[in-house]
Image (cartoon, rainbow, N blue to C red; front, side, top):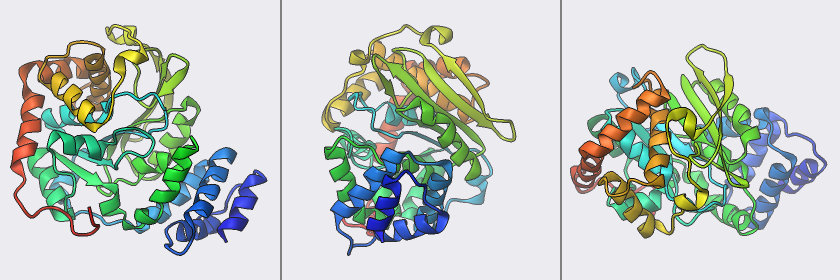
Length: 357
């Protein structure tokens, strides 16, 4: 089945919804070889994923996920996720994860959905573990942490058990330098079903498609961004060049715009200024930002994206106001304290037993 679908994609023909359902069944099956899965994913990426295909993948994969027991009181407000889709190959430090901690310190419930590194040296799970924040939470413990501490990490493999059968195919694709549809659907599959999302993509032409899929999935407030960085594009708002924004809020129509660092009173830098390393290196970089020791370009990147995140969550009335709030949180030590609280708050026995570590 997967081989025939790969052939169809290689002839530039889109998949129907029933075919996507069949493809997901094959991709999540232990009996199908990883090489065949990788060939399919590469063919789909080469053709270019349509909005209908992405939406169908999201629908099928969501059906297979584990939903945490988040209270109705918490769901009555905004729940935020901040996530880059990866694949920009620019080796920056974990900007989105840092922004998530800033937003949580502002009192915004942040349901951070992520995984271990596949297309980078340090995934969100890797760097949070290096920072001492538990990542293997049961659904109950994650829901409790979200309500009690305004932050919980939802490890993709714990809440999407079927992903374990896709991981090797994704690694094969990464070794070939090839992104896959899972770079896009990751932020769309957050099991906490956030109502507000700041999503970064490494290809600006995909901003509108990802925003439309998020709108169709029921997200209330959304900004999808892609930032120029030298010859490439970051899956973040960029302090190194102009950024494309595609956004919508409640029932307002989707809008597109461009913004530069100077528009938001920030100093431009280079992408080399944002370089990171492995999870241990990135953890130290993040700690320096949270401690107020790093006042340079990495802090600027965090302020820029935190400003957008706080605005998307409805905490501020503009990105500029969000930048000011984020700067105050970093300078006051509030975000550093949030990190320490997360290190200390969770009791023993909360690791998930759904999937082996």
